[in-house]
Image 1 (tube, rainbow, N blue to C red):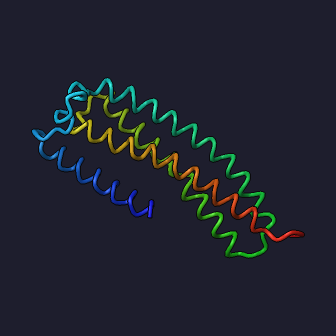
Image 2: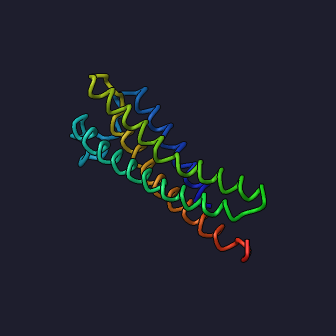
Image 3: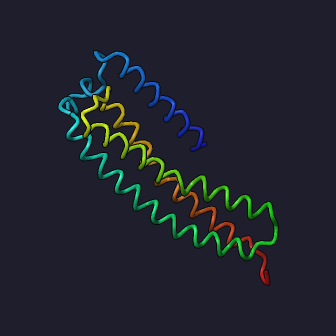
Length: 154
């Protein structure tokens, strides 16, 4: 059920960004007075820190890669190996791809490119960061389950 909710939240945030970017007068940040002064400097600062966090999560997933290879070495069923590997690639690359997208956006802001609806984009990036942490935990869970499902003597 959580996966369904995450998909709906992602779609909602994408639509909110498109609407906010298309209608500059909408500006979600102005609706919430504490965020009315949310500008590109704050955006760059916070998103840079989120990108660092995602890069460190990506480094952590390298450890999960090592664990996955050890589990794969003990599995004799090709379907199990395929499942382990596909889950690992899916979950392990998510934080790194998210960090690259955020880094690219920061680069464009630093070049002076005007990013419309910067607060709404920040909400989307926050969701992607939280989702990256969730997916990293999920791959760890998959690997633990797989490790306990290996028959003894294999």
